[in-house]
Image 1: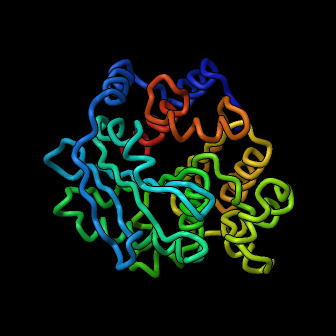
Image 2: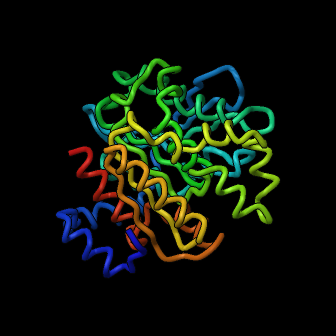
Length: 295
């Protein structure tokens, strides 16, 4: 889907039966300013970076779970990027548990190990589903930038979940936020001047490995059941997001692609920082999609 300004975004939601009620908007607005609940740190491996933060929704029965994977060029970043922003209180306010994970970083770890870490973190959370009151049938992986690539890779290559003892029955949906390395060979070619060294460090020079680590090339079924692929107005991010959506739909997987205002690196950072603010257009789109997915 092409970029839609706010008014058109709301029209799109209404026309597809996804319009938010006044009560839902109010709940989201209240959640955006509500203090975050206490953070529980959980280890899912022996490495110091194999840790996640879990923030429970105010519920006494199993609730949906949103798991967030940070960005940082596969070589930096921290789980607190999400728990310190609007996402956790917003999704808690909507009745969803929220978790933000750390993972091992390049060059000490490979991208393959990072994707395995995402799956292992999810497996650890689901192993505690009864204690944490997680509804195992309503779990979504969300990631930004490099994290968007990782959740898309886990959502298209079943080996990572299988390696953690899981399957696509354990993931209801995937939400990549402004990723661009869904087609790694194309990305390395078109953005080599700015990011060439970062991509080479992450993906190497072997074309076969680059394709294996490309969600677009892994999008033949099976995949996670549904994708909501969001991007801002970056040429490479727009092309890559549309390409992933087309590949998923060709495989029979539900995939919605939508663009939002915000250019270049500023827009790239904004979609991560502002998601959870009810006045930011992408927040309402994600909320509506999650509500329809979770039922």
